[in-house]
Length: 397
Image (cartoon, rainbow, N blue to C red; front, side, top):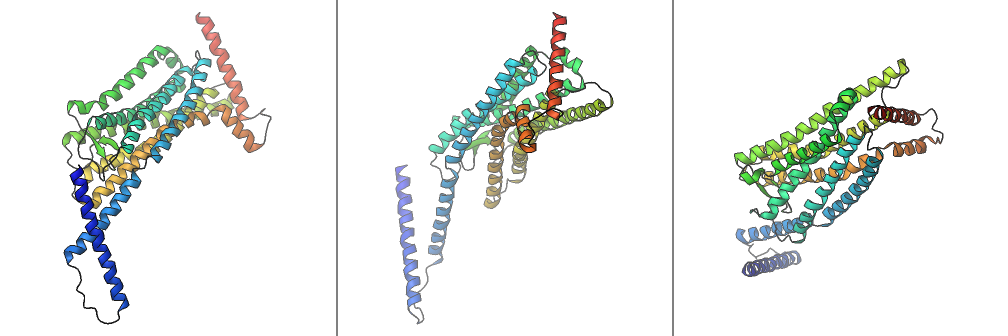
């Protein structure tokens, strides 16, 4: 190690001397108007100077790309956001434990807790790699740290997508078939479903342990993911296709279920105007609005990484350095957008609540009296829903 550092120092010292000679010769040529009799440097010397300039530029770019400020700020913001959202959801779950919204709140609390763990565990490893990074390029080997980080990124990447689709399916059943939902969905079954979702994501993340795919360091050497560039194998392609198919399938399922729930609530709203009866309550509208926010956030944040990974593994196998750098930048952009999902998810619950929307409505319209407004009708329908559910509980007892 020390011998390599010494030889690099000598090499760059010689390049520095040659660059000084070039500057002196250029000044000499500028000061004397007569024809220059000085022979130019050989092509070998010029190539050495050009290589040194490119290497110095790459070194500066690598150091700037490995600054720990951005991941540290992202990790801090994500942890604080998820803690606030988890506190709000825990209070709501304690208050509405016997309400039909309890299942949704249990799913949402599990999602936020998973996002919180997804910030702390992989974030600590990434900060460790940033603080101990001494590479000028991505390392070619894959150690235990890389295996753990890659598995964590796959696990904490699939869990929010699986949970989001499960929440959308649960709400779709609750909105379209409320009686069937009341008969099938319970707190115990919800907890079993959560455990199965976590086990499914964990089993996918552990596939490299049985030689299906491999986790490798990704550019600029401070994070790990499925091998998508370089000497990829068929197992790497199969692993990436499985990961992308599960992610895109979860987003598609969320889109379909949320669309059905939204159309059902709109149709119920239109029927409510024709016949004077309650067909939808405020909790359904609030939950579907939050699910739409989760779905839009997940699509914006995760769709690029899923698509960029497929593009890289199928088109980025040439020896062209420029093309390889292009796909490296795509992957870095994709993983940064995906990390934003864990920051934005909790703010969906924080902002898309009736209390917050009521305050925004009052500030934008300047109305303090809520009588006759949409939020007032929401509150009335919510109270009617809670009273009817209490009557049904008493009858069952």
